[in-house]
Amino acid sequence: MNHVLDTPRLRLRPFTEQDLDEVVALDDDPDVMRYINGGRPASRDEIRTVSLPRLLGRGFRAAESRATGEWLGWFCLAPLSDGWDTVELGYRLHRRAWGRGYVTEGARALIAEGFTTLGVRRVTAQTMTVNTASRRVLVKCGLTFVRTFFEEWPEVIEGSEEGDVEYALTREQWAH
Image 1: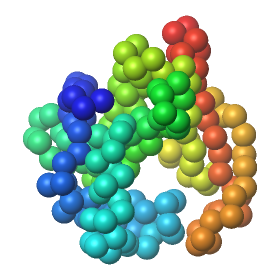
Image 2: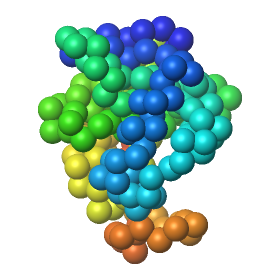
Image 3: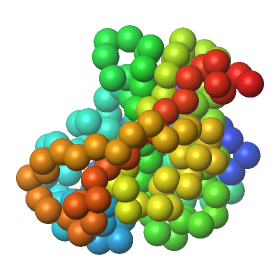
Image 4: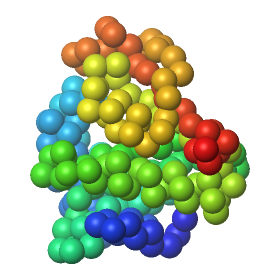
C-alpha cells in the first residue's frame, strides 16, 4: 500500500513526515476528535512522536482532493495481524469535508483494493454506538453490524456509556 490510490474525487497517498502540520490541524478540531478522545486537542509533540509514526506505518493514507490538492484527512485499511487476512477500516477527515460523500468514496476504494489485490478476507470497523454518522458510512460501504461491546477507556467520553459497535464485511459478502 505504498502507492497512490485515486478515486473520482480523492487521491489517497502514503503519509510523509511533511504531513505533520496537517495532522496537527486535524487533531486540534474538537468536533473531529469528539468520538476519539472527547474533543481534547493533542499537543504537536504528541502528534509528532506518537500519531505521525503510526500514520507512517502500514495501511494509512493521507487524503487529498484531486481537484484542488487540499489535504482532507486520512484513511486506513490496517492489518490486525502480520498478514492482510483481516484488516480494520478507519478514517478521519476535516469538518469541511464532512457530508460530501468523501468518507464513503475513500472507504469503498480501500475495501475494493483490499479484496481484489491485497488478499483481504475480512474488513472490520469499530466506532462508538452514538457515532451515527460513522455507522451510516459503514453500512453504505456494505459492512454489517456484528456486536456492541464495552471496554474500559482511560478517559470517559460523552456517550461511552452506550458502548462501542463493531461492523464487518467478508470478501464473499462484498463480491455479491
